Amino acid sequence: MSVEDAIEKIIGRFGRYQSWILVLCIASKYPIEYQLTNVVFILPSVNYICLDEGANNNTNYCPCDNPLYVTDDIVSSITSEFNLICNRQSLASLSQSILQVGILLGSLFFGYISDRYGRKITLITAQLSTVTFVALSATGKQLWMFIICRCLIGAGVGGTMLCSYIYIIEFSGKSFRSQATGLHEMSYISSYFSLAVIAYFVREWRYLQLVTSVPWVFVIIYFWILPESPRWLITVGRKKEAIVLLTRIAKRNNRSTEDIENIINNIESAPKDQRGSYIDVVRTPKIRFYTMINVLVWMFCAHTYFGINQYVGRLQGNLYMNVMLSAASHLPGNTITVLAAIYIKRKLCVITYFCVVAVSLLLFIVIPSEWQAVTLTFALIGSTGSHYSFVLVYLYTAEVFPTVIRNSAMGLASMFARFGGFIAPFVVNIGIEWVSILIFSGFALLAAIMCYCLPETKDTTLLNTIEQTENRKDIPIDRSIK
Image 1 (tube, one colour):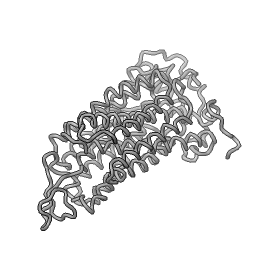
Image 2 (cartoon, rainbow, N blue to C red):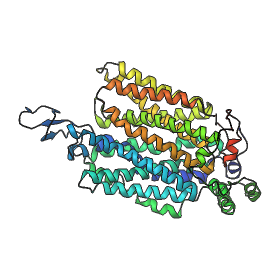
Image 3 (cartoon, rainbow, N blue to C red):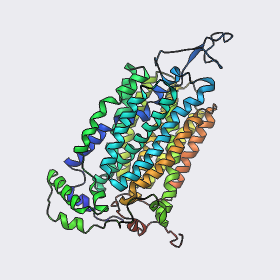
Image 4 (cartoon, one colour):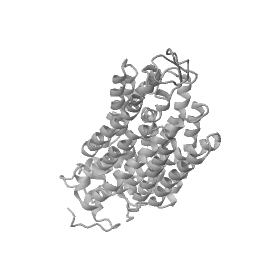
């Protein structure tokens, strides 16, 4: 289904105004991206000399009540400050996984609020909450205080990831969604790289939290700068506001403002009883089928992604250089992803990325550990592939669901993704590396298989209502199923 996109016709595929919006969104996302990648610096796997009587100063000896931590790379971390070793190692896994619980809650809460009350207010609120709780996490003197803050940080992270992406996509024309996705990812790549640089100079975890949060309090001014999503305004029936906004954007992009009112008034709005409820993502047969497939794909994808990321910090060699190399490897990956999304069908792109991840992980198992360069190469391929499979899944899901429930559907999928992310640290800590990696590889293959059941969405106009989605011709659905 490829029809004319009315919004693209009015304001263009991605003009000067949308570019300005993109810059603002990228600039505000750094605290969120830092929290997704800082686990290797604030909750690292540490080495220590056990000073207990009878331990004979052995390295990494358990049980150990008096460890002397090696601080060559990281001076202070949550692991060392709260002695999360030996029988307390499960608390380290919990401290990592609790972020996923927060992202789960934030995705559900902010996804619902975004569909009901608007993209703008939801996005800014999520960003401010993240900045606030990251700063507060640096002040806690007890582990439980950090864990609570970490959960609340996750809520803001989940809301921001979800709403920021949808916000940009809804300002883009159908012919620019792939490029917009790649540009939106620049905040992740640049933050991932810069975090290694910052952490190299700021080697105490409390100061690292403050440095990567407090400077971003400026997002409060976005309340007066960012506009509401015109697609959301149209969908909920606020067409007069949409016309005013689109007229302003069209002028800024040097496009004609004639006939905007007629174009907008001819776009179908959602009925008042269909305004972004979680019930709506399972109420009708086709959308219910899409929801079932997407939540499983997101869960498998997140499990693999967050599991692989933790291996980067465990590779031999300089920690900071490994992280910087991992970040740098995402740049060509981003370019390849954008080109693939432009020229290749969406379904094929996603399935291919999942298969690349699975194969690279299987090869990681059989490569001798002394081949450090080769091991690092396949670890980076797996890390990059898992990240961009996630990026493409975001785009794919946004195109599958209509505007009226787009954030709610992605929020629900993100909730299941957090289940996958939550158990990833425990799978990593199984203790048998090949078993852990085999699990991650298997889930990547399962995600690839399930994506085959979704419709092709490349170059399709974003649909607004549930009825439009139900009438889309792609796969046979038994409508007698209630």
